[in-house]
Length: 302
Image (tube, rainbow, N blue to C red; front, side, top):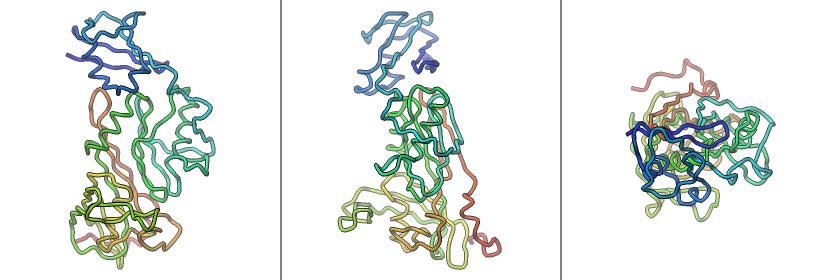
């Protein structure tokens, strides 16, 4: 049995099947939450169908109609201040390369943020729905941020970041010469009750796992790769600072040495496509901010 889902130009979906199935089979593929089910209708021809046992044949015209709940409206954040590099896009989602010092979403104080710029891009291309960020990276960091373009796939993308199906890798320049090639960090993280903006390693905190690989050594710094299987706030920053290697220019957990921003880049991301479940992989070149190092100082870690 193969059920395919295609996006129509009006934002609704078309369902095709190569053999008889039931409405429940279609609902299973759509995997729509109870809340979102309130805002869709599934039509066979011109008639709405609701019985899970309703038979659907290859010759039937099946469409999923989404009401206007999720459409662009006057309250949708939109910013035409500047563009944003989009490194991947398909019908369901896109991935943007966030520059340092930009918020992923609004903080109530500024109208210009990555989500608002993505919305401006989508709106200018006559998209029906605004973007929704799936993952977030810190304001001063740079790198890959995944956005859902359709409300019915947001939950599927979210779930991948919650259960570890989505894979994220980061590059970081840290203060100090990292002693080991590989470091596995399994220190739980909690909110710092004494400093509201900060997190901390705390034995009663939430489980957090970061794997660090040393890539290059410099006179008094190191280039490392970080892989995370959990997504706690400030996880990489907290873990590295806790073992004595704070990320360079970290205003919360380290020392700010120049104006280049937090030397942390989300450079690699992979996730599964909605409906087809094919894996998409994206990788960026090293951020140009990192290239202030004199190449003569760098040597392969050994």
